[in-house]
Figure 1 (spheres, rainbow over the protein chains, first blue to last red):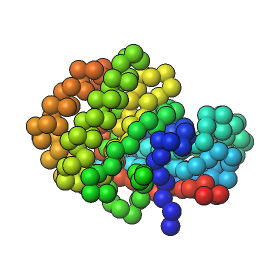
Figure 2 (cartoon, each protein chain N blue to C red):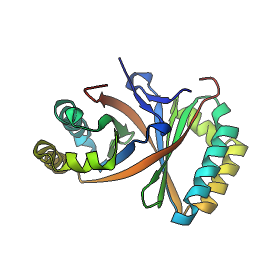
Figure 3 (cartoon, rainbow over the protein chains, first blue to last red):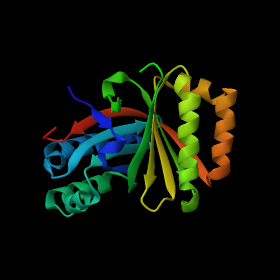
Length: 112
Length: 112
């Protein structure tokens, strides 16, 4: 098995997308996002990884996604299949807010 | 060099801490957080990694931090040196909002 790695020297763009959700719908949203990523998004040019998180009161789902650059993200958003999946997610979530970031620096534990 | 890795099976707690900042102070905040982590936090029990991001308009700094569990995070927050560093960061940032998450699932690109 391979893991997503956070490498500041890679020059990727990280999109952190925070979805607000009713706690009872958190699993449904997680499943939808994971399936859409596995079936469609992971094959798109420039996609690197997506990692799905839930907070402890189950009111937020966060997708920490890496892409090679912002142009690849813009192209993905106008892909018809992806646009349909965004619409599906928007029906389950109360809101979502994707913000692009640059990874600047990582510090690891002393013992790692 | 080693990188932070995102492993859903590790059972870590991820803290995503979003700092709102004046664009002109983004680098000062990044430097403060990186230094505090390198000098103090990385030696604390349960700390795994911290990765610092900046958005493209430089109004947000995000620390994506992994800890072995929530108890380790609670213990870190009452450490005197950490508390002092949090106070320093609070003077530079307009606000900050640490939220703990569980990493549930990762999808990698088809070509990885």
